[in-house]
Image (cartoon, rainbow, N blue to C red; front, side, top):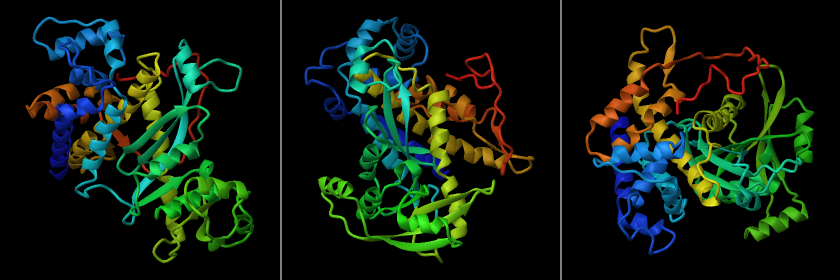
Length: 430
C-alpha cells in the first residue's frame, strides 16, 4: 500500500510539472517557441518522446496523434523535427530529477547498513553513422572506422534500480571527469561503489572532501602501500595516503581543493573461483563493517552493468530517432526517465507478486523486457488522464509472465557462435 501511495504521488508530481507553464518556459530554446497553436504543442511533444519511439517515425507519429486526439489528425516527420529543435534536452533531466526526488522522500527504499548504495560507471554508445554533425560534435573511436561514438556515465542505485543521474558527452571525455558531475547530487548518506577504472588518489580525496564514503576495487600497481598489502596475509588494514603526484595536486587545485594526507582501509576479498581482489574503502570501522561483508557489497555493483544491458538491449538506447546533437541528448535523457518509471511501477507490482510466491518452488520477479513493452501507450494514458484504471491495468500487465529468481547460480554461461545478429531468445518487447 505504501508503494502504491508513493507511485501515485510521483505520477501526480510529474503531471503537475508537465502541464505547468514554467516547465515550458524553462525548457524551450527561445521565448517565441511554442507560442502559436500547432498540432504538436509543447506538452504533446514531450509526451510523444516519452512514449518509447522504436518503430518507424511516421507510424509512431500517426499512432500517437490518433491516441491523444478525438479528431483525425496527422503530423509529418518534418514537422516533428522542426518542433523538437525547440525543446531543450534538459526537460527530460528535470522530469527525471522530479521522479528521483519524490522517490526518496518517504524513506521506504532499500538501503545497506543505513547507506543508499550508488554505483557509478561509464560505457560508450554508438551514434547514427550518417551524421557529420554527430561525428564533429562527439567524435569517433581511434580504430580507423568513422563511426560517431559518445561517452556516457550513470549514477545508479542498484538496490532500488533507480538512475539518479546520467551524462552523455564526446568520446574524448573520460569517465572520471563525468563522475565528478554525479557527486554534486550525493551526500554523506550515500556509499559509492566504483570499479578499477576509477582507482586514483586524487579522486579518493575529492570524494572524501565532499564527505561521501566509497568502496573501490583497486589494481595491484595502485600505490606502494597497497602493493605491500597484496603480498601480505592480512585481510584488512588501515593505511594513510600521504603522497600525491604533482600533476594530480594541480588537478585538485583546479577543483578548488588542497591535498592533505588521508586514511583508507584495504580489504581482501576472495571470489568464488579463488581469485583475490582488494578493495579500498573509507569504511574504517572493522566492527561495524566487517571484512566478510565486502564481497556481497561489492557484488551489488553488478546492478549498473545489468542496467546498461537493459538500456541497450531492451530499450534499444542506441536506436536514436534523429541525426542531430539535440535529438541524441533528448533520446538519451528520456531513456533514464522511462527506465525509472518502469522500476517504480515494477516495485509496486512486485509487492503483489510476492504474495503469490509463498507456495511456489521459486520466487518470481517482474519480467523487465515485457513490462517495458507494456508501458508503451499505457504510460501516456496515465499521464494524460485522472482515471486510476490505466495504472491498475498496467500493473496487471507487469505481473504477467514473471521470471523465476534462481539464487546462487554459479555455473558459467556458455556462449555459442551464431549466424543470427539478434538472439531468438532475446527478442525485444518494444
